[in-house]
Image (cartoon, rainbow over all chains, first blue to last red; front, top):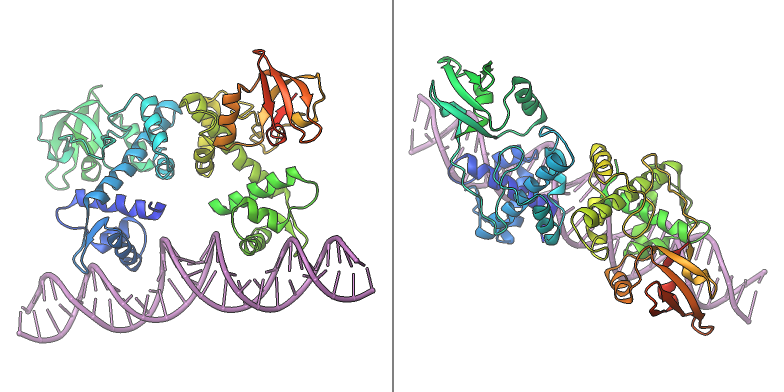
Length: 217
Length: 217
DNA sequence: GGAATGCTTTAGACATATCTAAATTTTCAG
DNA sequence: CTGAAAATTTAGATATGTCTAAAGCATTCC
């Protein structure tokens, strides 16, 4: 049985190991968990003792099979609760992250099974992220970042990588909603910012910072 | 902002102060929270510093107005979640206590407001307990214990004081459901056990231990 | 290839919440 | 009204998770 804190570290390690190849560094974890490197080292020793991570001093860290299974369980709970908050309670997609961050730690297998059924076994959360299977596998999506799309291509906005209220409200204001079709009109060579045409015909400016957080297919 | 533990102590103090007149003792709290008296003393000092309780060494403890408001807020959350678990997720009333015990600590005012609306502003939880108002007042019910009912009286089962799985499953097996009408047929002078007739015509034995946990009107 | 730089770990503290054992206060019974 | 029993508090530890400061590796840049 893991503490809230241990679960959060497992999630953080999982999330960082997706972003870059190779093992996850102590400093990267410290930044993501908003703690200091020394605290991370303490926790890594502890998770290593429990065989949830592969860890060699100074060499970075990687989840074991069991560690990944647990991380995906937490992510599954998080995303199911986000669906509940949006679909059933009517929260905006920009307001659910922090609450789900708490709900994901509620301990009850039966609860997760029933919640999943109540929500009709959703495959994606309100941000378009796939919901890990009960067995602890992350579904593949094959989405690309909007930054990788060429001028003239028509694509569909499928998911967002950033879940902060500020970012999501910015998208709302721009008229960029999940599922909408967008066409890349121009790419600015200097700052890699984009102009895209939305379904409604309006033209929207997207800085590289915005575009790299938009996943399309 | 209170920790989970502080919230649990406030709830425990509230609950004990209902059971007996006068201030709550350190030992009673130690028993209810399944800790040792010494740990309770530490926490009482802390809650006293925050002015959530009136506390004088060796003299027992009582909630301040603010302390009671917070305790009722926690109880409100607990009972709303219990309604959710039974009404929406289909849990049995015998299986929701421990999960609600965790959910009650989720911090989000907006969440409680929306959950309350989603559940249609319920007045009672699945065990018949009244749900405190958003303002932090506990509704009066005027229920009596079944042990106080005289032979021959017809009463309606309104609530239970004990929420353990074992107790509630025992009631299920006896055919005693909330809302059912029961008639007290006999009271045993020696052990204060009862025989009651239910709506369905069957006769049910209830020990004093059971009867004192049944509230009727 | 060796020092400067930047990560990472160790060492030593602190806060929370718990415990046991000992000391203290209150209560109550004779 | 006093002494023993019961209740409570204090003292000193433990475990978790955090911090700062200092020391130990690793990389890389001449």
